[in-house]
Length: 265
Image 1: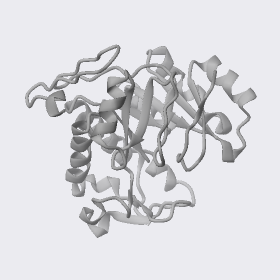
Image 2 (image 1 turned 30 degrees about the horizontal axis):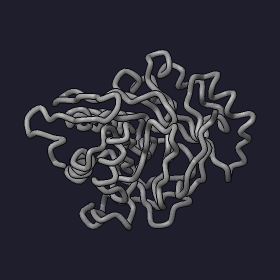
Image 3 (image 1 turned 135 degrees about the vertical axis):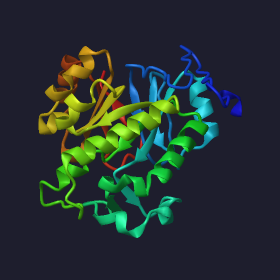
Image 4 (image 1 turned 60 degrees about the vertical axis):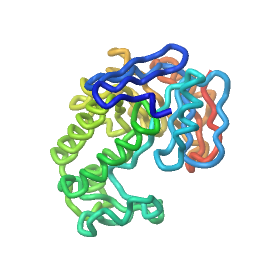
């Protein structure tokens, strides 16, 4: 099924509600129920319009199945930290791998101020994302600079300008491949990113009170997927009405993202 693409001005065929993307163009992310799961057996509900799954764990065949069913596939890529279980881990220079990412064994921060040292690895990940048939990317850990303002140090004293420069490069690289790209958390960066990002995915925005920061996405008709975690004590009866009020797609998930989430009605 490589026929999804041609070398120059590649064409992306999408199932029901087809979106066409050529070079320097990309499909619009639907504003509909999201299934976000990064590990485990994925079983999608009949109402799902968008699926977000792991780059390495997801096969091209599975992506083709989703697209044939009219489901928009988003590719999860960790861009701000490196995980020792990923197949390209050994390609990262040792001196750009920093302190452990708190709470996740085997994951360490990356020195995004020197992303030129691993840009070729991220480019290869984006290429793989496109080759598998994904239509967008979810770049995780684009808020590394915030860790250096708390006690969760990256080991590199990263700055806001370091972060914005790196994210700007990622946006350019994604769009050049015909891939949409979303803002993951990092509420303080909305003014810098809103004009160039295509959607947003938020974790615990209701719990921590930063939903307001992403209203501009809704005002620009860009979907916002707001996830709250069961392990953090989310109350669906309180969260879901708030998500609807803001115009967000509300999702209730487990922290490990290893099983089927629930969508707000």
